[in-house]
Length: 78
Image (cartoon, rainbow, N blue to C red; front, side, top):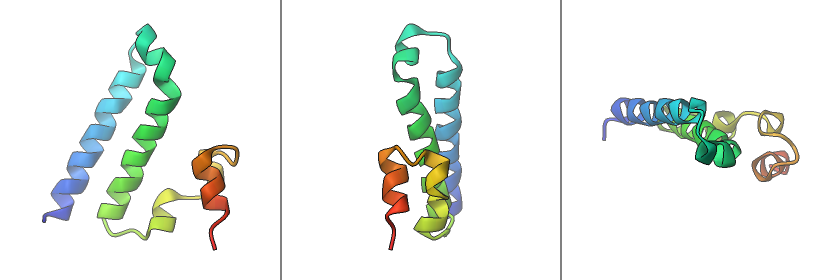
């Protein structure tokens, strides 16, 4: 497996999601928050493929929002 190519492909998909999020389309508006999370998760996945430890790849709970499921899960590490 070529992890550099895999990480690049994941980052390319992240960029595509970003373009979709910028579209002024009612269907996109309805799912914009989910798309933002998906885009951010693709970034996390790329960091993991690059070899970053999972806890470092996700960042801090505040990056996601303490009131979100991901933020709350990160806050309860340990």
